[in-house]
Amino acid sequence: MSEFRFPARFLWGAATSAYQIEGAVAEDGRGESIWDRFCREPGRVDNGDTGDIACDHYHRWRDDIELMRRLELNSYRFSVAWPRIFPIGKGQPNKAGLAFYERLVDALLAAGIRPLVTLYHWDLPAALQERGGWTNRDTAYRFRDYAAFLFERLGDRVDLWLTVNEPYVAAVLGHALGMHAPGLKDLNAALRAAHHLLLAHGLAVEAFDDLGMRKTSRGQGPARIGLALDIHAYAPASDREADWEAMERARTLEARWFVEPVLAGRYPQEGLEWYKGQGVEPPVKDEDMALISRPIDIFGLNYYRRHTVAHDPSQPIFGYRVEVPPGRPVTELGWEVYPQGLHEVLAWVRDTYLASPAAQPAEGSIAFFITENGAAYPDVLEPEAAAPKADADRPPAPGTQKRGPRVRDVERRDYIAAHLYYVWRAIQDGIPVEGYWAWSLMDNFEWTRGYSCRFGLVYVNFTTQERIIKDSGRWYSAVCGENGLEVDPERLVG
Image (cartoon, rainbow, N blue to C red; front, side, top):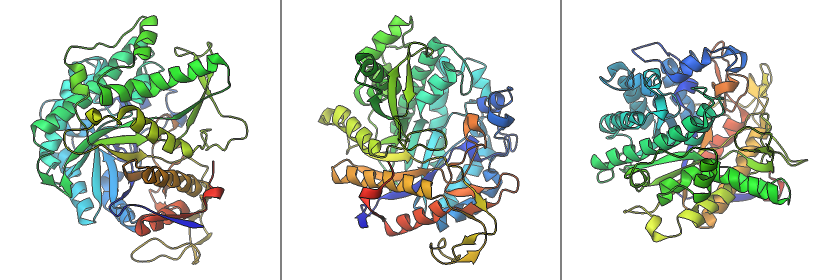
């Protein structure tokens, strides 16, 4: 076993999103979201599940902060529900909705936990969807108003901000493949939505700068802003030219289409040509790329797996499929466990887009945050199993025994350990990774999977709302508390 130490001010966190944990969808003036409506369409979500109650975090947030404290987190990533602040997406703000987030932020800071706030994690106000949603350019400007309001009301306490989470998923799965809200199957709508999501990001950064957020020390330093993109590692399924071309197309349409506008102020030419071949193109106006590429301080990376890509003209729209090479480890969802890919993606972004001084923001360099990383496995709750002994100040240490409920999720622990090792490797290679947020803090509503799969460090009984820290959570708390990882690199999963 070897010990791998992280930088002294490294941020150790866990992540959630509003619709996945809050519940209380019709309380205190919250408006309806596109996910509220999507969940009520038959066949959209496994078992007909909804986020109506989810983890009931809206009422149990104090207990959940105590869980974070026991896990020794020094940061927590959460999203604000846009319809809880502006029930119809614009107009008069909902005071009760704002008060909830003010209480949450104040309590996090009192517990020594630094908030990382995401402005948009897919729960668009339904009233805006009725006007076209993200296919309507005006939605990006309404997002700017919403972002500016939160900067003004929470910016004296929150110094870390993310604008948009995974715009690829919101645009493509939501508008081209029909798999997420709003459930459309229209490539032109997807391309318009993707552009307007990126424009919304740029407009929010503009508002951030107009308010002077980077100029004044707030919280633990000058406020910083960025976004969170989901990027996979990529490999061809074979040495066939068709598979190599399919892999590059996948990387271009899934990753470069979103990274390049933000960091280089352009869409990839190969992607533009491909979309034109499908008869569509992004609705770019003259000022758009300058807005989208406004300097950011944080590059948030959501990394879960590798995409091994095979040419497959039978696949709808994009003409490729994702495979798992024979014999490779997978999670419960069939996602390949490929931890070295985290290092590969970080190096790719740095070397491709950040090597030039012109790519850096005006003041300081861009920091990498691993804003999501985790795995679903078939957790088994052992109600009367031996469990580690509880302690008033931190979770039980493995090895001490007490009768009680327990989840022995060794696979999740090993998954996180392997990825953290490659975070450490990236830091040694000079890649400025400043924090890691495990997905997720607790089991929650996993979109179209509903409650059928679990990613949490904390087990949630969705009937009683009881929370139980899993073995992976106890292990992760020790990593956070010691600011270091003890592993044998030769025995890491993947």
